[in-house]
Length: 338
Image 1 (cartoon, helix red, strand yellow):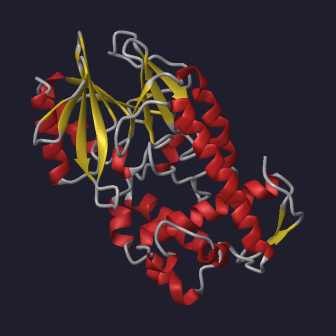
Image 2 (spheres, one colour):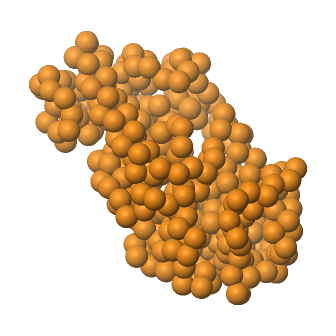
Image 3 (cartoon, helix red, strand yellow):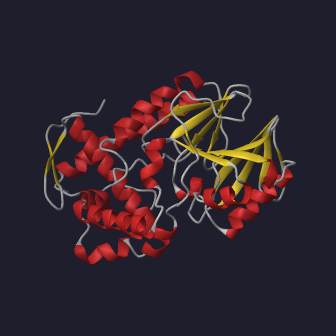
């Protein structure tokens, strides 16, 4: 069921609205969702913090028949700015509670000192993955925007695996799915059989799984384990954070797993061919766009994805590292991943 207008707001099921939120990336927008209940509205994710995003959200709420006073809470799949960015503005304007998994809290930068510390961590990480000194500045050309994008809104409530989201008439179940971020969650609407997948599962592109300063040690291993947690929801309609709603969750899970198995082999082969740092490997493997054409955000994402696969290969005893700055990677055995 769909009932949409020029505002970018669509009724996708009874009492459930999808709002297209402007997002300055090739994906063009992220999605916020509004669930109507007896107590008002609960949002699943918000969007990028911008005046255009604020207008899109408030117009969508009006299109759904509500006002800012009717918004009781916001539940967030993860702390990235295209999902959490508007949280501070929404909280100030409505008083609605904000809920997030506690593993996402390290991504929140409450002070200028926090932002500077995070930027220093990213700079150090670029050295560690082998970015040449004469290229580091290019990969931080957006440093001012990067610091602005770090949300300062501390959540009012924490959500853990298996919790029921408040103010949803007991219908919305939280499921912890680490990988894209350590505290990523998906939410299953039991009444409508709709799974809000955030960035864990998208219909066309694969989620970026990066090993970076706030990602944990083995994010790809975490992610692949989290994919198996979607088994009970194979027949649900997926409402993702980007692109479009889709069915066939179980089939999409299989496709994504095949993608990562192939990517592991491709990266092993690149190291075996003599590419020894994550930077060198990222320049050697295929991306949707040539690596040297990516903007700073895209290049950091590609490097993070390369690192997550190198670490997973190490965990599978197909790769070993030599500590230093940069890290050097060496292949161990020519065998396929499992």
